[in-house]
Length: 347
Ligand code: 13P
Ligand code: SF4
Image (cartoon, rainbow, N blue to C red; front, top):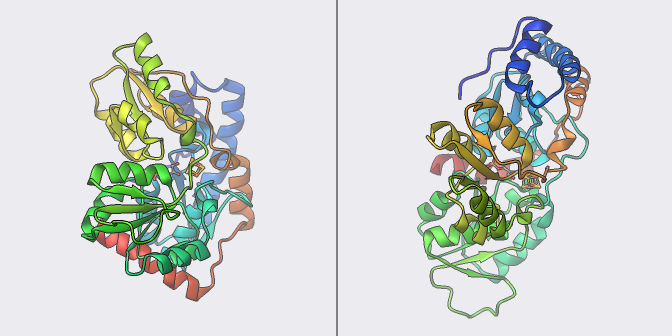
């Protein structure tokens, strides 16, 4: 990932934003946002901060202040290696927490008090301990969309970019894959494993199986195969991309499935002219702004309420006042770090 060089004046900030976003955001709003963005970029330099922006950030923020944008895996790698004094994470809490686990000597700031995630809140450390007791010796693969206490009970983490690869590399007949039911089912399909729910009686045949949890992303669970069929009925040349947190029947109906950054690259490298993105809406807008020669079907009605908490205004306040700082108890951090280190080694 190459760092994005910040603009040197409010006018240049505005010009850059307008070049990408004038079709999407009214001029008056862009001017106000450009002023805030310029101040953030000035302060970021003064305080030796790096700003990481997830691909789901709202377009004005995404196209103005991050030094790096990307998916969970890419941003974790940047966070682990940055020399900046402060990491401002424009994303959700589990992402900022991951940055702190990997690089504890940096101050990690999350520009919101909450920044939750329906997947991260679907499972507790106690749930994982119970599963380990029920299935002793079975490796636990946990999605990065979880909190530190759950990561601390995990053998290896994964993201949407490397999940199937990690499961294959574990070279185990059976794995416990937490907490996203749909991501696990999509990986099971890719790796040729059978899905088993923990409620199923112990003693069943666990050969080539994946034991799954019932967490779901509240955004991606809303997509249906009909969304794909309806789009294709109207525009047969539409290329459909679905995030692997979507239900398996949606992923099956799509032309491509991958992490948010994999989708960015797919669109940029495709010769096709029309796309439907089955993922968070800001992501469609951000990709559309980078690809003015391509058309994106306006199916987007699903904004992640947690990602939506991050605004330019709160990012400025966070940087000015060093708030909300992520803190973790050291023993917990070290136990959680093992599962992230293992992921980074394997991917
Ligand atoms: P990515 O790692 O693909 O960016 O996904 C993170 C996420 O929260 C998707 O909902
Ligand atoms: Fe969590 Fe879904 Fe929001 Fe991603 S889009 S942060 S998985 S709730």
